[in-house]
Image (tube, rainbow over all chains, first blue to last red; front, top):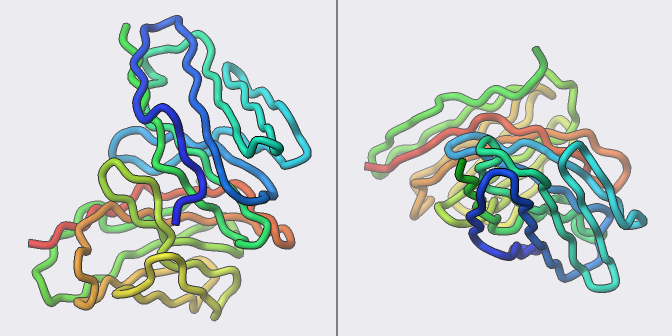
Length: 111
Length: 115
């Protein structure tokens, strides 16, 4: 079963705009991770946020985590055409010991 | 360079045939995983292994088998018992720290099509 659920399923923006996507989950977690997947390729790890952290930055990426609401958000600032990809959240559940992936948000950035 | 190598990239199979997908890593990771991805869906865990000579079923293990005889290798066999094997298969590895799963490193995937 899938733990994380991303919202929206798809997002279309223009270069220079910000892209925000959300992830909700159901149980207690050790950490939450975001991955990127270009079409037909493997996933690439973007950022990991631990359950005791509230916000984390990496370059143009900003991730927040609200464990009381069981939700996380990924913000990509000043988007570029090269950011076009699917983005997945994955949760490391405390009782599960493995990552559970959501269905992903497909982001299209047009020049 | 360190990483994970999956082969073949594309594979065609006739119904009733078993096929084996290769996954090799030189990252010295203890944990390895196999995921299945269908169009428009997330990744579903097939099998995982946290140490050599040990592996556990994931969410959708039926019709699949694995082995972990070497730390570097975690091959996946898709058997004829798998009813709908056409999918994109992803192998990954990670460091394990106690009960916490860290960053996964993925291969480039193998696309299996049943004719």
